[in-house]
Length: 388
Image 1: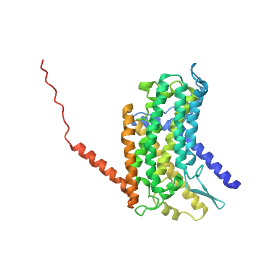
Image 2: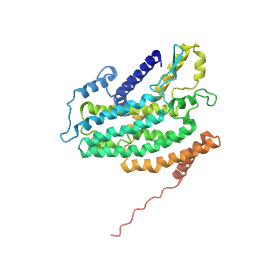
Image 3: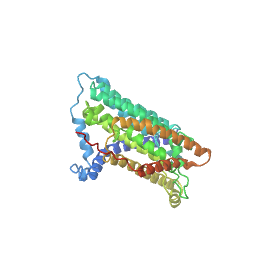
Image 4: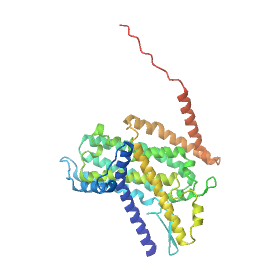
């Protein structure tokens, strides 16, 4: 690798790192604004125009609050917990292809931190490690509510990582690669005559629903926020935390939201590909300028998809109530995992008989069952007559 490629790639890595932090910072502002809109309120409107400086005010508050470590806590693990959660959250975005390539001095450089051929395994490995930050913090706090929250987080992540991994297997069977860039590039082909629209969502609707549901659970977002359920566990695994250590836990959650939204967009919605991109490319000038302009448009489109899913996370949080813990486990083990296995079998059959949209048969079957169930008359319980 010559010095020019190294410098350009270093700039791309630092820009991705900075954008990740910036989006996570302003996701807190967006969350409060979305909540205000859904609840017919104004939301933050004091710190700067439209309250846009509110995240900076929150950061100053977090940095200047009193540091507190419980007397009986394990000090080093208590500090290491939020640091580990933040570290793993930031590492996950390294392999996500945010754009095609940048042409500079005749060389094509991928808009990606690390272009490796096992990108999806990297993300799963790092995300699996993220639960240790929660577990370490909950156990080191020497608090029963924190410990219960940590145990909940561990069992929840294990349960939903299984279904998430099984949902990804169907995509791997179709793409034949573990590289996220290869998966995105395969979705650039025409669909119904429209270039850049051959998205996996048209072939894997069941896998998408399973993956999206598991992403909510992995990010500990409502209705899967049982590890920090304030009605039962005070504050869950971060009950004893204050100052910036608490901020790290909250910040890691928003970074995980950003990363999961990016992965969903890359796997199922074409990543940086967009409808009509071949036509747009024909309108741009030839050479490096046109190529780089098309890459820039793709990056903007990709971030538009990411922002939509971040908004969806927030929309669901302020719309649905929290599950009970038994409902959470039943959904993971009794519904999502069997459905993901069925999705793999149907996908394999579809590839065998060269019919890629085979999983739509599962959707049709479930819809028919739902209609039949809704059409059946409900049994009404007659009140028993008192014999007294």
